[in-house]
Image (cartoon, rainbow, N blue to C red):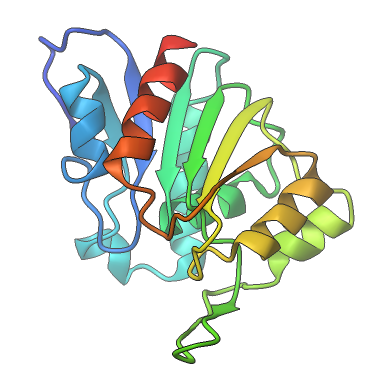
Length: 195
């Protein structure tokens, strides 16, 4: 597990962060969380972690969640493939008692009709099947946002998963996989203030 931020952070809070594929804790969304004074722990999806099998990655995240985030005041933020890892890590656990923010979470296989590009992550159908069976362990406080034009996350499949799992999902009109700082910045501020 990786940690970022100093002991001199303006806020004592720590966020467990899972970035998208090839992401680091101190870049992009992680950089915005650090800039807001939060210390970060989590898994960078590069280097040694990226070399693990998908099952090993999920097990590592699951262990992190149990050891670091199993309390009502815990904060978890995951983006894109990090959201996919988080959702898979939830399988086999009780619902996470902390607060969770998922941005553009990958939910399974998708394809873009115009270009024919496809994305097929490991265990692509497991989350959908678990939700449809009514056995997904929905975290106690989860907030999900996705662009309605996000072919990588597949907003329709994500809406279906969330509906089956009893999770509210927010569709961002005209947004793709990158929701953009003008959307994410105010969302982060509001979500963090609600802590």
